[in-house]
Length: 134
Image 1 (cartoon, rainbow, N blue to C red):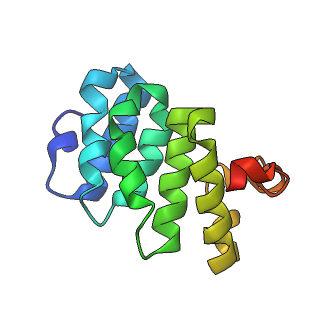
Image 2 (cartoon, rainbow, N blue to C red; image 1 turned 120 degrees about the vertical axis):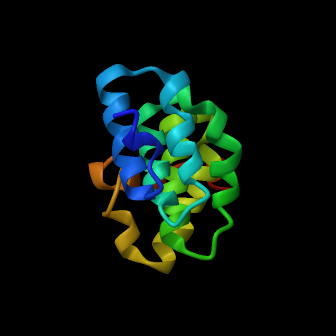
């Protein structure tokens, strides 16, 4: 998998990074791979892989936060989900605001990927205290 992890094709690199993480779980080796995808047209997939890695992918948090200003609501929703997967409750206010805004723009973003697709996010985000939402 190390060869494909360095492939020119971002889709191949993303698949290789996810496979390496599942097989070896070495954040020092794997995290840079999806982190690099944040600069490609596969940035959403890179964010999803980083979310699966979780807290060991903390180095990507600043880049994921910058994705929250993207024009595309799908990019913002994937970035918010990754922020939640990596940073957890510390990222809750920005995750909640971003997901609510994305859902307002395009309701389909609420059912297409984690955390929304797990059924976790939508009811909990909508019932969050105003202090978390603002």
